[in-house]
Image 1 (cartoon, rainbow over the protein chains, first blue to last red):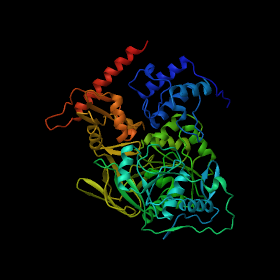
Image 2: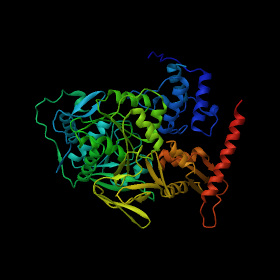
Image 3: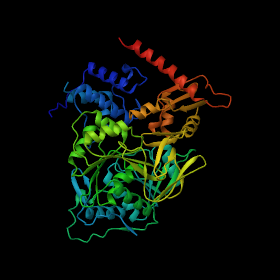
Image 4: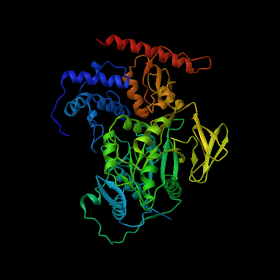
Length: 94
Length: 462
């Protein structure tokens, strides 16, 4: 797999990922209210590992790749909305 | 006296770590190495996330006469209670733990990391542990504030997981490699990834693969026969990902009811049998079934079920103390049993168990909360059927507090899986004449809220 790890998500992708997260988890927050730099996990948006697997599934369907942690910290990708969107920008195939 | 491991040769593999085998000889050397470095004090809270380090820490504790504490959750309130339960506890950790109310000890560098492999042919004396030795306390949330301890002695744990090896069909001539998506600290992961490998000549993978692609990679890497020890939720996300699945010899599921459709789908996708395990923290596992084709559960050897006091009690076999089970159980004439649902007040989310009564106490104890109640939504049955994870709702009367404050305070006391979604603020709770919040009233409040929320979402959209 080729990957461009330096890819950065633009504002459009950031908004798309916020909307997708809110919708996948039926969160009671406006997508635009998610701070792109705030933690998604634990305090912050309050997601847990169950939510993260649900979002990962939606990401794989929509962007055509499977998330991998490869023995690193499983939740690092979800450290913030920006981090998730950047990861998608770097790995998306569609 | 019972041996730490049952493998027949010191060069047999007991674990795989980062793709490398760990021999019994190496494991025993690591156990003695860590045992010699444990601090004084009788108890160890083993928080290691690496399954191999967890196993070494647990075994080192047994060898050094320490007792492991295995709480189901690590909230600040739980840790404070554990510190009161066993003040001489040290937290053994391989991660970063800040703000612990207990002294912490970083996991020592393993021999594997910096020393040559022990010479083949060296003596490898397998440690023996007395059957009656108390080796662990496991905890349930209980009905009051403090976690309730349950004793685990070595002999009964060994009896338990040796029977599991038979129930899962381990072949001593072809020992399996176990891949677990569950943590080793949870009773299911403790038994079915760590102890079952140690006591049946098998090997476990030290990792805990999380994303579906990581689970697939771990199964691909594992020497055959590979077995996946998982939950209905992980199984569903793995199958829904739609990626190619490597061969597996057996799938094992526990922690929540497995929908029969999902069981059949999993068996077909992997071309392997799926066994479901039923148990509890107090009893450990007590029964198995092939869920794709069987309704009835087969008990582990020697275990008795008796109906009394409106509950089904489990006793004998490897059970330490007779306990009432938290499910409604129908006994069959052939000694097997059927599960007929949960008792009303009890909540099981993602393998963690508590009661609405306990959650309500936590909510009502928060400064500024005048009234409040948790609610288990009716959608539970539907969510079970989809192997989705249920979330609780809660209603609260707390003028002057906002949701973020209430949630932050709850997070200190309550495991995150039980945090309410939604948390609804009311001017008063519509309790009935007996002071209860009837289920139907709670459902109506929830339905009204959902309708408002969906209308607001539609308005937000361009």
